[in-house]
Amino acid sequence: MAEAGTGFLEQLKSCMLCSWSSVWTVCFFFLLFLVYILRVPMKINANLSTVSMFLNTLTPKFYVALTGTSSLISGLILIFEWWYFRKYGTSFIEQVSVSHLRPLLGGVDNNTPSNSNTSNGDTDSSRQSVSECKVWRNPLNLFRGAEYNRYTWVTGREPLTYYDMNLSAQDHQTFFICDTDHMRPADAIMQKAWRERNPQARISAAHEALELNECATAFILLAEEEATTIVEAEKLFKQALKAGEGCYRRSQQLQHHGTQYEAQHRRDTNVLVYIKRRLAMCARKLGRTREAVKMMRDLMKEFPLLSMFNIHENLLEALLELQAYADVQAVLAKYDDISLPKSATICYTAALLKARAVSDKFSPEAASRRGLSTAEMNAVEAIHRAVEFNPHVPKYLLEMKSLILPPEHILKRGDSEAIAYAFFHLQHWKRVEGALNLLHSFRMIPYPLEKGHLFYPYPICTETADRELLPSFHEVSVYPKKELPFFILFTAGLCSFTAMLALLTHQFPELMGVFAKAFLSTLFAPLNFVMEKVESILPSSLWHQLTRI
Image (cartoon, rainbow, N blue to C red; front, side):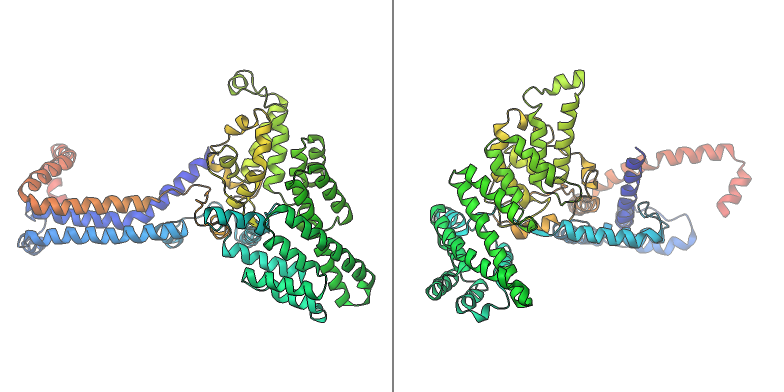
């Protein structure tokens, strides 16, 4: 409660700081308006007689123009504030007020305990921001020719963004190119093909390389981009496997002869792992799930150190399809470790297994009466952990938001990762009776969840990165939901009020004078009552001396 109260006071202080200038502006224009309507005689001091005479000689058009100018300025401020908020997610005036006015007024941020810890905290937060906003290759990415292009042919929409495809091109150059490619004509052609932006030019280069030699990377490119069905892609990957294994055995024997041979062997290893993983994915898509599981297990045993491909996430999805929940638990026990990076697949699969044990008999009403059992508490905590890691997933699992084809790259804890997870795992949640009903209670995430309880605070860079990864026709899910800053609402009210005031004063000056007199008399009634009481209590001589002062 103390933290909540402190946060509310800080927010209130920021709002007050950012709105002082506009409050004074409103008061100034409103007093000028009252002076015009009431023609109040300046009897307070003789020095104000000149000012009173000047104000009494002003025409009504001056006050209408003055109020209209105030409305125009408020409208321009409103437009600028709205544009700045839409682009950067914060109010410009609030940001300037908190950054510059609060230190001048003696405000101290309670979240910074000391200067000695500030530098360390900034370093840790910057490192965490970089790691949290790193873009990862989607372990379950689809085939560009057999799946993405077919979607384009049917709908006329491009499911992949230029940014996403550019990242894939960089990945291909990292995995499939080495410094010795220029020594082999086919590999030299493929080195240029992977850097080519035009898909047809890449495909033509791959065919040209195959005319010279059985090039594994050329088969990979054709399987990914030219094959129109998964069956065709699988045939090409099998040809690539035959060529890739030969290159791998030759480079393995020569890897210790120099740095160039070592780099070539590393490239051949990446090619072989990529081919076997895609063959396993082809088997999974064609319904040969057990064969796919065996291929993935063998691949993980043969190359245990190549974790960059995240093959265990492919294995988890295939095991869930087989409903081999004990094997799924065994894989989670190995990879759901505190020292390893988390993912939506890890967190939500663990939550699914915990929910499976209680979801068929779980009832919120009964649980509220008798309390949660140990198993139910574990399930609730697992779902809470998963929702905190990626709060976008429940919208797709509960079908509150439509799915699209997942991108080739994802941002962990972002909307892109949620789409990639739900696209393949929604069927597994539906298969477990009552699991979605249990998840339904977490569709509304508590507000402080983004501050971080089990994980680091929710990164603020996910929306920008997801907009680059996801197509324009998809509405990106944003968390936490941005609320309009106080100053935008205040400026909108100020603009509307001054515009209406100028219009009414211009059309009905006498009627507005009556309203202004009534408002002024009501406003100063308590003050007049207090002054009368003070005059009756204090001696007249003392009151005379005070008025002279």
